[in-house]
Amino acid sequence: MTSIKKTDILNQVREELLKGNFEIAEKLKIEHKISDKKFNHEVNNSFAELTKKDKFSLALELASRYELPLDMVKKASIQKFWSFYKNKDYDKAALWGKKYNIPEQNVIMAAEKAFGIAIKNHEIEKAIRLKEDFDIKPESVKVISTEGFNAVFDKGEYLKAALIGREFNISYKRTALAIVLGFIKICNDGDIKNAVKVEREFNIISDDLFQELNDEMQDKTLNAFMENIINYLLNRSKFQTVFDIVNKIGLFRQAYRTRKLEDLKGRILDSIIIIHNRCLIDKKYSEALFLKDNFDLTGSEIEFEKLKRIINTAQLVYSELVKNGNLNTAKTIKNEYGLFSENVIEGSDEVAFETGKILISKAINSGDLSTATEAIKEFNIDVAHINNIIVDTVLNMIRKKEYETASKIVKKFNLIRNKKIEEEASNAFDEAFSNGLYEQAITIGYSFKVNKELTKEAALNIWRRLMSQGDFNRAAEIKRKFKLNKKSTLEIANQIYEELLKNKKSAIASEIRKEYSLKKSFFTIILEFLRKFF
Image 1 (cartoon, rainbow, N blue to C red):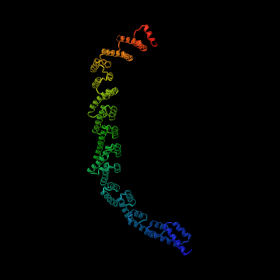
Image 2 (spheres, rainbow, N blue to C red; image 1 turned 90 degrees about the vertical axis):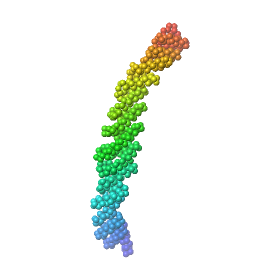
Image 3 (cartoon, one colour; image 1 turned 180 degrees about the vertical axis):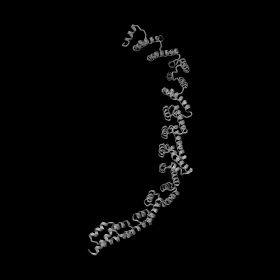
Image 4 (cartoon, rainbow, N blue to C red; image 1 turned 135 degrees about the vertical axis):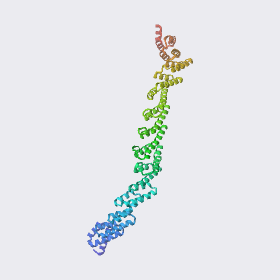
């Protein structure tokens, strides 16, 4: 092998070493029988060139493989450490120093620098890792994190400050202030989702945090929460969201030592009650019931003064529904709110009495006697008042000529002997009879059992008209219903019979003969039979 070729081979070996292809370089050494001295010379030159080019990792890998002198390795490691440090890659410098046994004070110095930058950049997790991995002294952590806390706090980045304060044990009073200032800002911005997230992360609605705040900050925090979260959502009918928020906080499941937190529960309930009552009045019953059920507005835990406001509104709505004839909805409201039974407030008896009277009157007026009967039992109104209501209703019906409905009511409630009803019915009968309104007269007379003789006379007049008009079926009904005697009907029945027979309407004639028990000769009956065919 010529000297030129050897030089080329050595250059090739160096190139492979510089690339980190150590096995290829070693193979070239064996194949071309390069001496250990020359090979090591190339290794040393490659190490120097790699460190010069700032390729320290590869240089140290080469040094480790070929067991270069420790002073060379240490010098290269220190050189790389300071290269990282001068370029302000402090976290890399710290990691490098720890890996290659750089003096501890230098490693800690780099770690502290990296910790400060992580704090400044709000890389909290990185800062925690640096603190733990490099065992940064507590006093250094406190100084650096406090500086970082102050810097972001002064910029108004309160939640960043809060995270630093929480993770690195800065004064809890200052951290608490940062937390609530950040929370207030989010609430005022209307960022409901993040407000809830922050509240849960820092447990803001709590005794531990609030005891660190002065009265002014407590008020500002709770006012922001109430106005920009709770009331904002309630006024937009986002009731499920309000329920979820309150439920996540656990607001109504715990007792607070801080008075203003206890007061917050009352403030929220007051807002809910206002919206609930508005929903009831606006006929948004399903929404009102959602609020009632989910916030237990009629439960045993609610203050009586608050319950009074709810029940008073429910009673007013119930009464309006009854007055407007919406009896099914009224019944639902009554049952849902336990009106006049479980939940009784001042004035409930009067409302029940007046509403009961209206309900009974409306039910009777509409002919819904079953509802009227049920209402009588339900409201427990005394008999005298019930009778007055029913009598007044019946009298009004008679005046409006609703005789049949009035009659059913009289029978249902056994008022057939009531003097007021009897007198009103008798007057109505007299007026109808005197004006020749016999159909009306017989309806009154039959329904209310008044003026029996004149009722029969009116019925007879109607019967005669029906017979003359050929409405024999209806005439027969009148005869039977009013029990018209044979004497009063015989003459006309005979006349009609003869007329029908003469006109060959023997089938109808036969029916009349039987209905009125007309006595006819054998010859007439034979003629009646023959008229069917001829």
